[in-house]
Image (cartoon, rainbow, N blue to C red; front, side, top):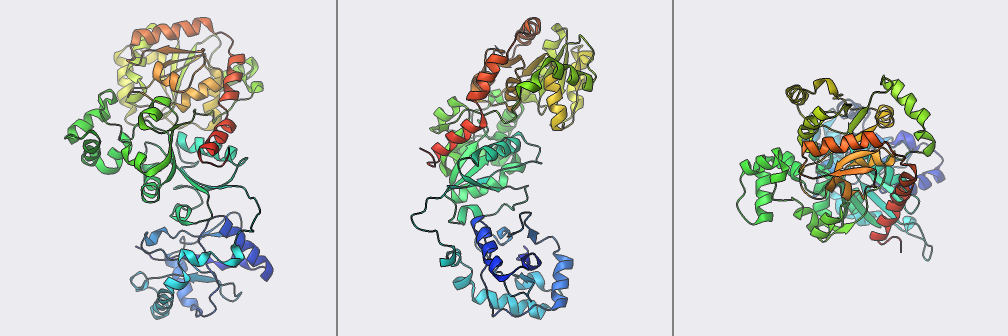
Length: 507
């Protein structure tokens, strides 16, 4: 563990009165930074050069012009707070433990500095030390609520990340929003949970351990509000703890023995799954928010309707725009196109869709990347005799291409296996664009889908899917009025307002 934080003081070469204003701005932003310590000895040039060479990426200048610090490498029990030296002759400071710097130049200076700071740790670097009179709130002055939002953000390849980015923009109408992300420019640490300046801390959870692992750790440790995008977290626990660890979580929930083999069966076919893997989340989060009403009711949690996070303007949905999109994609005149958007996996009903296409005179395009071997699905299409009617892009599409496929399509197809309470951002995208679509009943009802989404049974019978697609392609009815009404009721602004009410920020 590298016990170090570095701060580049060259960004602070301003007039003295400007420094305090900048310091206050950074503190308001929720970052742990320091206070003046005139007793700290200067650091030797050779030592600083060694730090630059070995730990060149350990200091992170904020794009807004301030400085942010990630104290998390120290762990929860070794939280050191970097202290800014506002004296113009000192450019950098570092907090070091002796083992971390043993091989660096001028190690004796490093050790002396480390011992000096360690002796003053309790009185100077505690969180309480940051609550200085200079930064106190002005009494009797109403201010906007401050929300710390902990979530994946673009460029992470995640629908949750895209949703959170749109949500944060809408939230800023009602509160000051500070973003903390495991992949964003603001480092993900304990700061939002421990800094007293935030009125509410909101964590965003999904089923990906890569995107949500650290968020989940902090939520369990500190609590707070949570928006959960999934009705079960089997994939999260299996990816994070392995099948054996996930089996232990399931056994605790079901109060019976669960084997790793049973969890492996659930992972292959979620229709067999007996556990939802949400108990730890329920214990930690207050409030806990789901986007599917049946799941929220079953968990005793709160419900917010899933919002449109990829809105469409009416002017972008004209016949001319659709023709232009088809031309850009090379779709021939008169060809019927069905699109299924998003990542390709067994839970998306791929097998049933391929069988259905044997009865449908159209081309099905899977617009997304396979989570496993795409050859498996291509071989299946060959087996069912539909290889000529099905195209797998098997790549992550940019925003323009993604929208073009929705514009160019004659129908959408979104299916999901795995029980009650599924949410599909891809189906929401089709709805928002007014694209007539076919979806299984649970997926459609979870989104309060309008009438131009034709429902099929959750068992995903290929004959039913084929009949629904044939019907949609034959009708091609106008959807604009219903689309506009749905978009207004499911706007991200309405979602943000509802969230603020659940957080107690709005009445």
